[in-house]
Every structure is written in C-alpha cells, then in structure tokens.
Length: 235
Image 1 (spheres, rainbow, N blue to C red):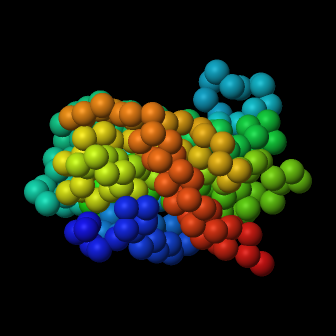
Image 2 (cartoon, helix red, strand yellow):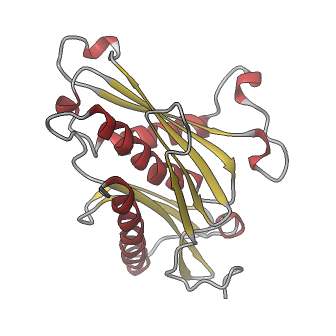
C-alpha cells in the first residue's frame, strides 16, 4: 500500500487553475498531489539571432525551485551566481518537449518563453512542469489568433518507478527517494513518445517492467490530456 492509498497505476489528484496570472499571455497553477508549479508564458515578437529571417519561431523554458518549495530552504541559484546541472537539464527537457508539440513555422518569427516555478515540491516537478507548460503555451497561442494553430499536439508527462520490484506510477518525493529504477515519460495524445528518461538508481530495469511502466504511463497521461482539452478547447 502506498503512503496516500493509491493503487500502483494511479496518478495523484490533479488540479489546474488556468489564467492564474493577470499579466502573462498564458498561465496556470498546476498541482499533482502536494507538488505545485506555477507556469507562465510570455510572447516576444522576436526570435534568437540564429532564427532571424527564417520565418520560424522558437519555444524555450526556464525552471526553478523557489526557496521554500522544499522541506529545508533551497538557496536561490541567482544568489549562487549559476544554475545547477539539474536545473539546466530540466528546463532543456521542458523546452524540447514543447517544441515537439508546435509547428514553429506556423508560429512565425516570435518566441514564447515558459517560466515554470515550483512553489511546492513533492516529487514529479519536471513532469508537472511539462503538463502545466503545455496549458500556458496553448493559452498564449490562443491569444495570438493565428490563421493556422501552431499547437500540433498536446504534451503531457508522468513519472514511473520501481520499488521492491513493483511498478508505481507518478511518484511522490518519498517514493522517488527510495526507487530502484526512476523514469519519466513525455508523450503526445496518440501515445507516441517524445522522450523517455530512465535510470537504474539501485537496480536494473527488466523488459517486462519497462513495458508495464509504459502502459501505466500511457493510461496516466490520458487523464491529463482530458484536463488539458477541457481548458484549451472549451468555448
């Protein structure tokens, strides 16, 4: 039995508040259990130098843990003077995932920056960030009122792990800290994979376990997609 009574293939309770910020072109506050991430999209009518004159847009992301999002205070990286390797890796993952969902030519020569700020961390902050970032991005694109919608796919992500030989979906912090194998799955609506991150923390990943993780993750993201659709495609 898991700490919160969930079944092995059950995701945490998800809550999404769209348009959470007044000034951002798109935003939401997304919660996976106790994990809470504030996602905000900013539209800029310019692109990085390497894309100028190409007619193509760009999507990028920034990620941060706020100081008291964790049990003990996390030092601000701006105070340290540099970002950690973990921060770099996560924000690059978010950016790659979002670009896979967007037709950058249809976006035109503009850049959308997504800020993902974790205000409370209890595992799965990168996957929650991707799910919330997709909503913030979709809301921002909606405001642009472009002739062709650049958002080709909805993107969602969920974590999965193995503890005592059991495959568990959507790990909280305690589970994530004790997992033998830790994985994150990023997918589009039809079940195609954008990215898989899997690491044998304290054990090895068997084929049958990987297939079970994939099945659990596909079923889990379906629930997320339905919530995203209700926000982005409601009249």
